Image 1 (cartoon, rainbow, N blue to C red):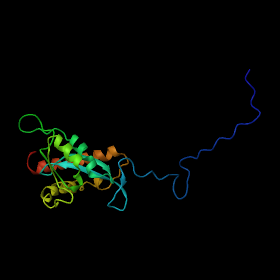
Image 2 (spheres, rainbow, N blue to C red):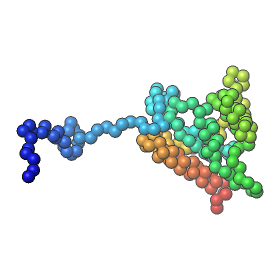
Image 3 (cartoon, helix red, strand yellow):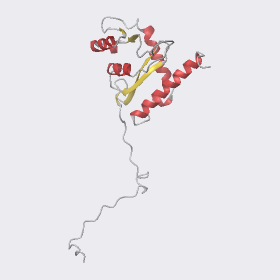
Image 4 (tube, helix red, strand yellow):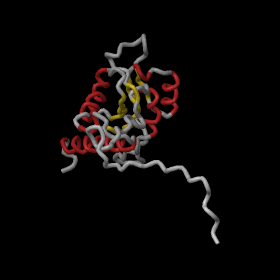
Length: 192
């Protein structure tokens, strides 16, 4: 025989609401959490959360690699990961190049440890020094990176971050770089 039922009844279960029950002017929906990985308050845009695109390009404006970070991450923190993420470039003959010959950068990259690390990798360094050099001399090289970033901003998905996952935003940034490379090579008649 089975055991007898307890004398004290069990507490009633909480009643779960159906998801389609009408609530205050909307169906029982909650606002999704904002942000996501690789977002942070932008120091230049009144603290709005956002992301930054960092890239290295060649002297003709073709992006070699790009990474994303939160809006409040200094540019110098991603220089070494950018250099490490450059894919080998096949040249005319010989082994493919894994690193550029010279690196031009503005005063944001003027950190002694970064200069030493870049030189250790066999890359020539041309970075403006804070308080010593004017950044006007680097302007003839720096405008190429700025114009490459501007060309990337022609892609609507990169102007404003719609994706909560950082991997998705990185994939769209990579896709934007691929399209930019394709258009530049097509313009230069390298791709029939």
